Amino acid sequence: MPTRIDNRGSTSATDAPAGRRRPGRQLRWVVPLLLVAVVFVGYALPPYLTLDPGRSRLPVPAAHPQYYPLLVAHIVFGSVALLAGCLQVWPWLRRRHPVAHRWTGRAYLFGGVFPGGVAVLGVAPLSSTGFVSQVGNTMLAVLWLATAVAGYRMARRRRFVAHRRWMVRSFALTLSIVANRLWVVLFVVLLLPQVDTTYGGDQDAMIRAAAGASVWMSWVVNLLVAEWWLDRREKDSTGRRPGL
Image 1 (cartoon, helix red, strand yellow):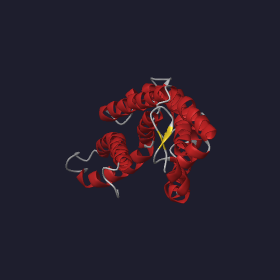
Image 2 (cartoon, one colour):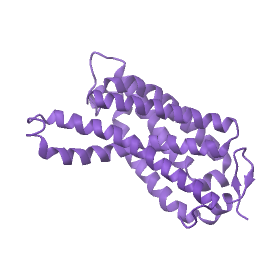
Image 3 (cartoon, one colour):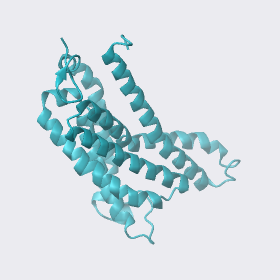
Image 4 (cartoon, helix red, strand yellow):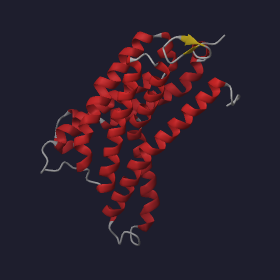
Protein backbone atom coordinates (compact mmCIF):
# COMPACT_ATOMS: atom_id res chain seq x y z
CA MET A 1 0.00 0.00 0.00
CA PRO A 2 1.35 3.49 -0.79
CA THR A 3 2.59 5.49 2.13
CA ARG A 4 2.51 9.13 3.17
CA ILE A 5 4.24 11.24 5.81
CA ASP A 6 1.64 12.41 8.31
CA ASN A 7 1.68 15.59 10.40
CA ARG A 8 3.98 14.03 12.97
CA GLY A 9 6.47 12.77 10.42
CA SER A 10 5.41 9.10 10.54
CA THR A 11 4.65 7.13 7.42
CA SER A 12 1.13 6.35 6.25
CA ALA A 13 -0.64 5.70 2.98
CA THR A 14 -0.06 7.29 -0.47
CA ASP A 15 3.14 9.25 -0.60
CA ALA A 16 6.56 7.65 -0.81
CA PRO A 17 6.08 4.78 -3.26
CA ALA A 18 4.35 7.12 -5.68
CA GLY A 19 7.48 9.27 -5.66
CA ARG A 20 9.68 6.20 -6.21
CA ARG A 21 7.54 4.99 -9.10
CA ARG A 22 7.50 8.30 -10.91
CA PRO A 23 10.99 9.90 -10.86
CA GLY A 24 10.81 10.27 -14.65
CA ARG A 25 7.54 12.20 -14.45
CA GLN A 26 8.97 14.46 -11.77
CA LEU A 27 12.01 15.22 -13.92
CA ARG A 28 9.67 16.59 -16.59
CA TRP A 29 9.05 19.62 -14.41
CA VAL A 30 12.09 19.62 -12.09
CA VAL A 31 14.64 19.88 -14.93
CA PRO A 32 12.89 22.78 -16.75
CA LEU A 33 12.34 24.56 -13.41
CA LEU A 34 16.00 24.22 -12.46
CA LEU A 35 17.08 25.26 -15.96
CA VAL A 36 14.96 28.42 -15.77
CA ALA A 37 16.41 29.19 -12.33
CA VAL A 38 20.01 28.70 -13.50
CA VAL A 39 19.51 30.86 -16.61
CA PHE A 40 17.81 33.58 -14.59
CA VAL A 41 20.54 33.64 -11.94
CA GLY A 42 23.20 33.54 -14.64
CA TYR A 43 21.70 36.66 -16.16
CA ALA A 44 20.73 38.60 -13.03
CA LEU A 45 23.57 37.93 -10.59
CA PRO A 46 26.96 38.63 -12.32
CA PRO A 47 26.74 42.46 -12.52
CA TYR A 48 26.25 42.64 -8.76
CA LEU A 49 29.18 40.38 -7.93
CA THR A 50 31.49 43.17 -9.11
CA LEU A 51 30.14 45.41 -6.30
CA ASP A 52 30.18 48.26 -8.83
CA PRO A 53 27.07 50.46 -8.49
CA GLY A 54 27.63 51.61 -12.05
CA ARG A 55 26.72 48.13 -13.29
CA SER A 56 23.46 47.96 -11.35
CA ARG A 57 20.42 47.26 -13.51
CA LEU A 58 18.33 49.35 -11.11
CA PRO A 59 18.87 53.05 -10.43
CA VAL A 60 20.93 53.59 -7.28
CA PRO A 61 19.67 56.62 -5.31
CA ALA A 62 22.63 58.75 -4.25
CA ALA A 63 20.72 59.99 -1.21
CA HIS A 64 20.53 56.47 0.25
CA PRO A 65 24.01 54.90 0.47
CA GLN A 66 22.61 51.78 2.13
CA TYR A 67 20.50 50.98 -0.94
CA TYR A 68 23.16 49.37 -3.11
CA PRO A 69 24.70 47.05 -0.44
CA LEU A 70 21.20 45.89 0.50
CA LEU A 71 20.31 45.38 -3.15
CA VAL A 72 23.43 43.26 -3.69
CA ALA A 73 22.66 41.23 -0.57
CA HIS A 74 19.09 40.67 -1.68
CA ILE A 75 20.12 39.50 -5.14
CA VAL A 76 22.87 37.19 -3.86
CA PHE A 77 20.73 35.60 -1.14
CA GLY A 78 17.70 35.52 -3.44
CA SER A 79 19.75 33.59 -6.00
CA VAL A 80 20.60 31.01 -3.33
CA ALA A 81 16.91 30.72 -2.42
CA LEU A 82 15.87 30.28 -6.04
CA LEU A 83 18.38 27.52 -6.78
CA ALA A 84 18.01 25.70 -3.45
CA GLY A 85 14.23 25.96 -3.65
CA CYS A 86 14.16 24.04 -6.92
CA LEU A 87 15.77 21.10 -5.13
CA GLN A 88 13.57 21.50 -2.06
CA VAL A 89 10.36 20.98 -4.02
CA TRP A 90 11.65 17.81 -5.74
CA PRO A 91 9.75 14.95 -4.02
CA TRP A 92 12.21 12.25 -5.10
CA LEU A 93 15.16 14.04 -3.47
CA ARG A 94 13.17 14.58 -0.27
CA ARG A 95 12.20 10.92 0.00
CA ARG A 96 15.35 9.19 -1.20
CA HIS A 97 17.94 11.60 0.20
CA PRO A 98 16.49 13.21 3.34
CA VAL A 99 19.90 14.45 4.54
CA ALA A 100 20.45 16.35 1.28
CA HIS A 101 16.91 17.69 1.57
CA ARG A 102 17.59 19.01 5.07
CA TRP A 103 20.83 20.71 4.03
CA THR A 104 19.33 22.32 0.96
CA GLY A 105 16.48 23.43 3.21
CA ARG A 106 18.92 25.12 5.55
CA ALA A 107 20.58 26.80 2.57
CA TYR A 108 17.17 27.92 1.29
CA LEU A 109 16.17 29.46 4.61
CA PHE A 110 19.37 30.68 6.27
CA GLY A 111 21.41 31.37 3.15
CA GLY A 112 18.50 32.60 1.07
CA VAL A 113 15.09 33.70 2.28
CA PHE A 114 15.86 35.05 5.74
CA PRO A 115 18.78 37.35 4.85
CA GLY A 116 17.34 38.09 1.39
CA GLY A 117 13.96 39.01 2.83
CA VAL A 118 15.42 41.30 5.47
CA ALA A 119 17.59 43.00 2.83
CA VAL A 120 14.66 43.65 0.50
CA LEU A 121 12.77 45.37 3.31
CA GLY A 122 15.41 48.07 3.07
CA VAL A 123 15.29 48.18 -0.74
CA ALA A 124 11.57 48.00 -1.52
CA PRO A 125 10.56 51.39 -0.01
CA LEU A 126 13.11 53.06 -2.31
CA SER A 127 11.95 51.50 -5.56
CA SER A 128 12.42 53.82 -8.53
CA THR A 129 9.18 52.63 -10.14
CA GLY A 130 6.89 54.38 -7.70
CA PHE A 131 4.60 53.90 -4.73
CA VAL A 132 2.61 50.96 -6.12
CA SER A 133 5.81 48.96 -6.65
CA GLN A 134 7.14 49.99 -3.24
CA VAL A 135 4.05 48.72 -1.44
CA GLY A 136 3.86 45.55 -3.53
CA ASN A 137 7.52 44.64 -2.98
CA THR A 138 7.28 45.38 0.75
CA MET A 139 4.23 43.12 1.08
CA LEU A 140 6.05 40.45 -0.90
CA ALA A 141 9.05 40.65 1.45
CA VAL A 142 6.86 40.38 4.56
CA LEU A 143 4.98 37.36 3.19
CA TRP A 144 8.19 35.76 1.95
CA LEU A 145 9.65 35.92 5.44
CA ALA A 146 6.39 34.92 7.15
CA THR A 147 5.81 31.78 5.06
CA ALA A 148 9.43 30.70 5.52
CA VAL A 149 9.23 31.20 9.30
CA ALA A 150 5.99 29.20 9.40
CA GLY A 151 7.55 26.40 7.36
CA TYR A 152 10.62 26.30 9.60
CA ARG A 153 8.51 26.18 12.75
CA MET A 154 6.44 23.31 11.39
CA ALA A 155 9.61 21.36 10.56
CA ARG A 156 10.98 21.93 14.06
CA ARG A 157 7.73 20.57 15.47
CA ARG A 158 7.95 17.59 13.08
CA ARG A 159 4.64 18.52 11.47
CA PHE A 160 5.97 17.70 8.03
CA VAL A 161 2.75 17.92 6.03
CA ALA A 162 2.14 21.45 7.30
CA HIS A 163 5.84 22.19 6.75
CA ARG A 164 5.62 21.20 3.08
CA ARG A 165 2.50 23.29 2.56
CA TRP A 166 4.17 26.40 3.95
CA MET A 167 7.33 25.79 1.95
CA VAL A 168 5.33 25.46 -1.27
CA ARG A 169 3.88 28.90 -0.53
CA SER A 170 7.33 30.25 0.28
CA PHE A 171 8.80 28.93 -2.97
CA ALA A 172 5.87 30.33 -4.94
CA LEU A 173 6.88 33.74 -3.58
CA THR A 174 10.53 33.04 -4.40
CA LEU A 175 9.53 32.39 -8.01
CA SER A 176 7.77 35.75 -8.16
CA ILE A 177 11.04 37.40 -9.21
CA VAL A 178 11.03 35.29 -12.37
CA ALA A 179 7.31 35.79 -12.97
CA ASN A 180 7.74 39.53 -12.52
CA ARG A 181 9.91 39.73 -15.64
CA LEU A 182 7.23 38.02 -17.70
CA TRP A 183 4.41 40.17 -16.36
CA VAL A 184 6.25 43.44 -16.93
CA VAL A 185 6.93 42.57 -20.58
CA LEU A 186 3.26 41.71 -21.07
CA PHE A 187 2.06 44.94 -19.44
CA VAL A 188 4.49 47.10 -21.38
CA VAL A 189 3.23 45.55 -24.62
CA LEU A 190 -0.39 46.14 -23.55
CA LEU A 191 0.18 49.72 -22.39
CA LEU A 192 2.52 50.91 -25.11
CA PRO A 193 -0.33 51.89 -27.47
CA GLN A 194 -1.70 54.12 -24.67
CA VAL A 195 1.45 56.19 -24.14
CA ASP A 196 0.13 59.16 -26.11
CA THR A 197 -3.41 58.95 -24.73
CA THR A 198 -3.62 57.61 -21.19
CA TYR A 199 -0.10 58.72 -20.22
CA GLY A 200 0.07 61.95 -22.22
CA GLY A 201 3.23 60.90 -24.02
CA ASP A 202 5.09 60.16 -20.77
CA GLN A 203 6.74 56.79 -21.40
CA ASP A 204 8.27 56.73 -17.91
CA ALA A 205 4.79 56.97 -16.39
CA MET A 206 3.67 54.03 -18.52
CA ILE A 207 6.67 51.97 -17.41
CA ARG A 208 5.98 52.77 -13.75
CA ALA A 209 2.38 51.61 -14.20
CA ALA A 210 3.50 48.39 -15.89
CA ALA A 211 6.13 47.76 -13.20
CA GLY A 212 3.66 48.35 -10.37
CA ALA A 213 1.10 45.98 -11.85
CA SER A 214 3.74 43.33 -12.52
CA VAL A 215 5.01 43.42 -8.93
CA TRP A 216 1.56 42.63 -7.55
CA MET A 217 0.64 40.08 -10.22
CA SER A 218 3.94 38.22 -9.80
CA TRP A 219 3.31 37.18 -6.21
CA VAL A 220 -0.49 37.27 -5.95
CA VAL A 221 -0.97 34.96 -8.94
CA ASN A 222 1.84 32.69 -7.75
CA LEU A 223 0.22 32.33 -4.33
CA LEU A 224 -3.19 31.61 -5.88
CA VAL A 225 -1.66 28.90 -8.08
CA ALA A 226 0.14 27.41 -5.07
CA GLU A 227 -3.08 27.30 -3.05
CA TRP A 228 -4.92 25.70 -5.95
CA TRP A 229 -2.21 23.06 -6.29
CA LEU A 230 -2.16 22.34 -2.55
CA ASP A 231 -5.95 22.01 -2.50
CA ARG A 232 -5.82 19.64 -5.45
CA ARG A 233 -3.18 17.47 -3.79
CA GLU A 234 -5.21 17.33 -0.57
CA LYS A 235 -8.32 16.25 -2.46
CA ASP A 236 -6.30 13.62 -4.33
CA SER A 237 -4.95 12.18 -1.07
CA THR A 238 -8.40 11.93 0.51
CA GLY A 239 -9.89 10.36 -2.60
CA ARG A 240 -12.74 12.85 -2.83
CA ARG A 241 -11.89 13.76 -6.39
CA PRO A 242 -10.18 10.80 -8.09
CA GLY A 243 -8.64 11.25 -11.50
CA LEU A 244 -7.39 14.83 -11.03
